[in-house]
Length: 108
Image 1: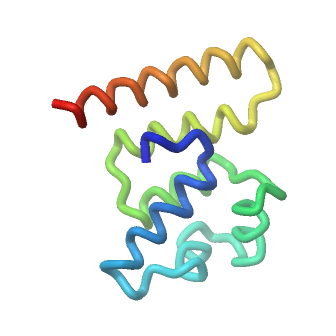
Image 2 (image 1 turned 180 degrees about the horizontal axis):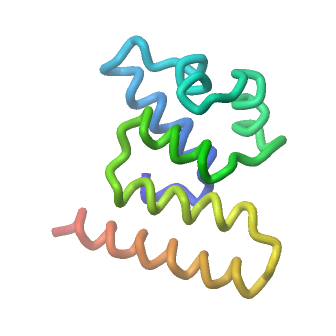
């Protein structure tokens, strides 16, 4: 997950991973857990819309993300939604620090 720079691809990969162990893990069930239509989730995943923080929280719950994973994907959402260059840079810096920390942990 920590290699992802976009919350949409992180969600997609997390769901695909979960499908391997849980046959009930589907886009339809994810959409229901997020309280959105499947068509809206599809639009989001195809970069035609953005999730709200609450919708992302519900997705994180459904996908059983740890608190750390949820915080990371929330940063990805903030980066995607932000239009202020200074703020985008600040958020990207936080994302890169988490990615570097995770890379170090994997190499130990």
